[in-house]
Image (cartoon, rainbow, N blue to C red; front, side, top):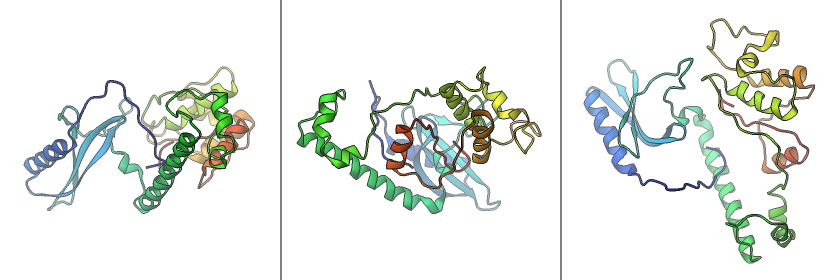
Length: 259
């Protein structure tokens, strides 16, 4: 979990979380009668799809199994590992360090409180936060330090692209920034970036697509392909993010094993 966000859906469909979780548990009990239910929770099982995930542990072997039920359709989603062409089914919870959940929740709450205070500041100034941002409204809020320190009016010309393989999150990020800098030319494909053209200290072809790029690899690419100095930060505050954007320096966020 990162900072809190607002989700806007058009023609949204209702879903029954309780029914999905109930069905997930029932299926786990039927399929694994000798298993112990470890947990049941709502997850983003195949982004952006939402489902109920029940983890059941075999009492004899200790093996764990996952049952996914879509919250909208109540259909059972087969759990499958990622392949070269398919991302598989996975839970975002797998990407969160257990030791970091508590701190992430605290940061979420702080971010949520900040968002609410900004909304209140806008209301006090007579600014409709649901309307398009105008120069006039920005001037109305310019006297509020909390707003000045939380937003930037600059937008970097970077368009999002999807990763073409399950291990191509790093190459996808690099390709986005390659297009931003228009360098190198021609813009390399995700496949070309992944293979590295001799840049990596490891062999991406042995075996192929068995692992992804590391943060150090991206720093190396920045040095030798863009002529930039890449930096890996263990923490990244809102003010630092604003400073980077204001100085036309793109950045990517990282969680364990994923960009």
